Image 1: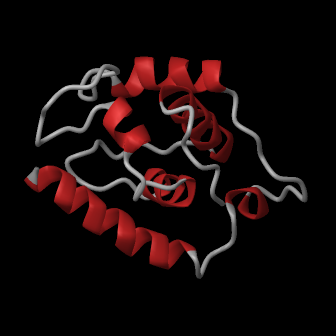
Image 2: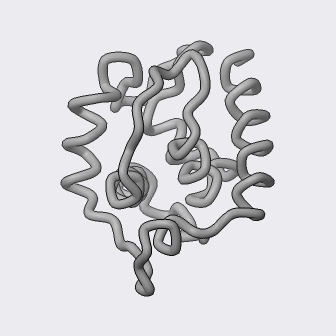
Length: 119
């Protein structure tokens, strides 16, 4: 529970920062919005993230599962996007391309079909 609170606080701070910066597609130099591909997102999280984050719902205060991240209404697309652009400890310091971030977000939508598609 403490980890989820810390992540939520970090995500909130990052989302405030992200409001002051350009969108992922603008930073990529693209005029059009990027759209995620869920199967590519699943492949990314399987390769890079599943060693720590479970794909199935589990009760782990230290590392949230993908299902719990997807189901949490506070983790909007924008918050997740901002967090993945600037990961924090205990996550490893890897850099994702904007399209990969959109692909991961699309994958999270498959885990929580009612998840709102927020900017």
